[in-house]
Length: 214
Image 1 (spheres, rainbow, N blue to C red):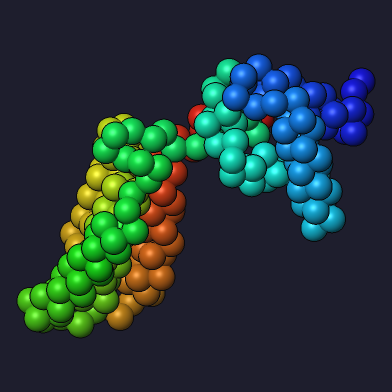
Image 2 (cartoon, helix red, strand yellow):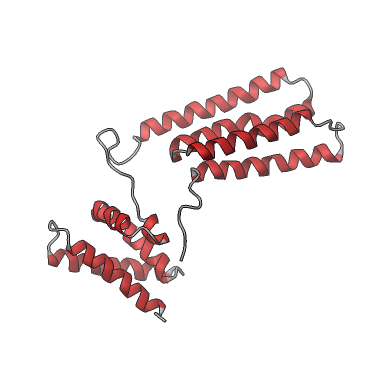
């Protein structure tokens, strides 16, 4: 059975072999990059990461090898670290990611939208208890909207998100709560937890099971 150290050396060897096939990188540069990789791994191990985690973080920190690392990850996509090393594609319309100003504009717009939704809800919902029950529901669409935009939510995950949100909204507003009763208190306490889990689903983009660990 291969030891953890032997497995790490095997990973580094596979990475080195792949990098060497890139004709734009000279053998001397490969040696230097490997030394840098090993230094990064040692630094990560010193913080308490295991060998595989240290390798993952180290290879992602090789900024000059983003394209090579991405192709390497594509060719070896069957393990967790090989999938996590995948970096965003660069396209003519997306040169390495969303421009900071655009993301800031989206965040500010959604934040303002959430504030307006809460204010409108406060004005329209006369019963204070009902407003408190629905407070999370008023804010959640804007949080989920940001994650859906940022993480490219899959249609299936979007459907699950909408159905779950609808069911929760129906329960909080149709169930005949006794005002101030223990059932209503439990609903108010647990609704944010459920919405937080749904926000996690939006953050994962519906791909939480795409990385299988062997």
